[in-house]
Image 1 (spheres, rainbow, N blue to C red):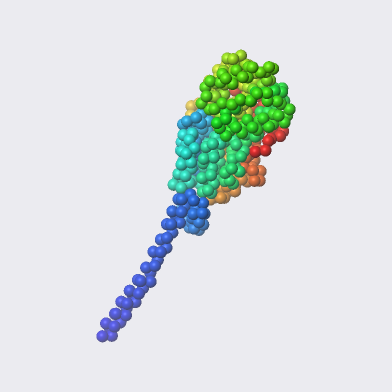
Image 2: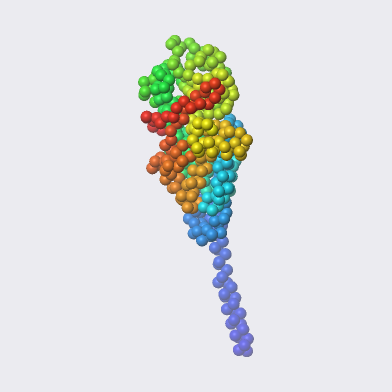
Length: 430
């Protein structure tokens, strides 16, 4: 009887022990935090990051062999492809070289590249995909401000550093937030450089201003150029506009020809090299051979390809002269590597910008000593004296647009030649 009683007591004890352990599954609420990371809502993402920080630190040895995921956002098709395809090729080349050299922090880079199709909605969807599903720690890509404005706010909300390879609006960092960085100089810098070159070197005291009213880039470029040009003493005697996709500029050219006297120079802000080439050709066909000056939207083979002999006496501001003969040692090495990889020389300076942007981000990750996005952001902001193919990158405190000089190219006998290297004396405020 005692044995039975003892057995019953033991049985009840065992049952009681089982019932006290059943609450443990409540710990499975953790997946809710994991789901919150997937959602790009700022509050949920912040909470998720706090909830998952400690486990990530304890699992570091296992995770250290996994690739570092960096998002790639380029418009490989559509109107911006002429700039973004070379830039994307430069970025992919940089990733290949870095991985061949051992990667970053002992890990390979997984560059997850999508085609934005020159469409803001598509670019926004890509940004969401990268930060929620692909779980990238940084994003590098794009060469235009409109695409950057579609991607930047999503990356900012998720706390992911976004480095645009070629978008040049100096307003972007303040428009988007402290996770947004530019690899190139701002449009206010290149516009000032163009205005000073026209005034000091070409003796342009009067000018025609012609710009594409359909893009953020050209709108700002024209604004900044006019501000600096008029400050120098220049006078805009006629201003006219067009919209990307226009092919007939005869009405605007007719108004220009009616001017008496004619201006000394022509400042034309175009988003696409093909547009600049078409405008130059139609101007020359109309008998107007005055110097034509513009921004880095001209930088592509289409300028001469479309403009033909009409591209003579055309100048533009850009990021570097792609020349194996006259370039720096870094430029020569880049051209050789690009040619080996793709079978042709870089199509424009945007190829070099895409290349530099990846190396700049990799440098920031290395200096951060971590793949934590905030640590990467802080390291990127502290960049000083980074030597790239397109120049030296330094970010001043609180300013996420680098200080860089401006290259001015002249078309001579159908060739892209160096006209000047300009550091503007004064730059309009963003």
